[in-house]
Length: 157
Length: 112
Image (cartoon, rainbow over all chains, first blue to last red; front, top):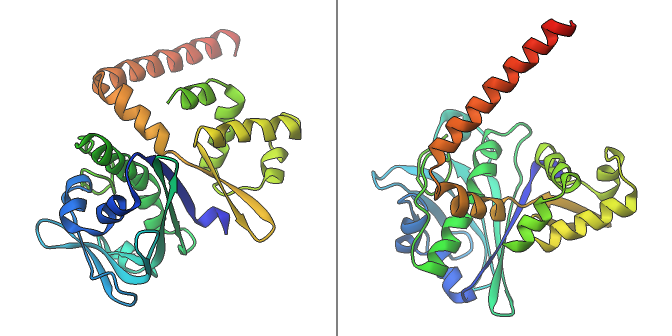
């Protein structure tokens, strides 16, 4: 089990409410997540989409848990290639926990198929996205880097 | 960030991170098996890595699993490498690699 999942943690100087907004609001995700807008009404069972500026969909899923501003979970099905599309959806969970004056953001991504291409794509992508998100919330600007696959540049590996 | 640099300053701890990179989500027992250290030393190093947020642990039933958390490394990368002209460092790193691999060839010839 441990091998086919990963857990990332970032401590971010913000509030759980702001961080929740950053994770769920398309205007916000667009700024730190390669111009992609996340779209959902965030009710359990509702669809989630991650939409590029050209209208294409990077990944889609369904809301599994939505307890504002502490717990957010959705299925995750990448659409960027046939290989990704052919895999079964995996699962993304965000936990937001106040620790003193900062928020501990824990991302768990699991439920991958054995040898999953999505695993490879996201394993290296999430740390970049989380750093960019942290930077945006703490300094007002996202990270400017490019070409890190599933990362803030929006370029795919 | 000081914690992260301090944690990364030890070759034993870097090796533990490398091992989690090749196989994520390992128990203490698994990590002890391949390590050339006592269980106590591994435990100590893991605690330090966890304090620096380079390792994250979760409980799965009765097992504590250790995961590599590369978010702080990414922050260092952006703050300290991206800023100082990444492409030049890359060129230097390639030059070093090239020279070192040549040296290996020479050594092999001489003693081979």
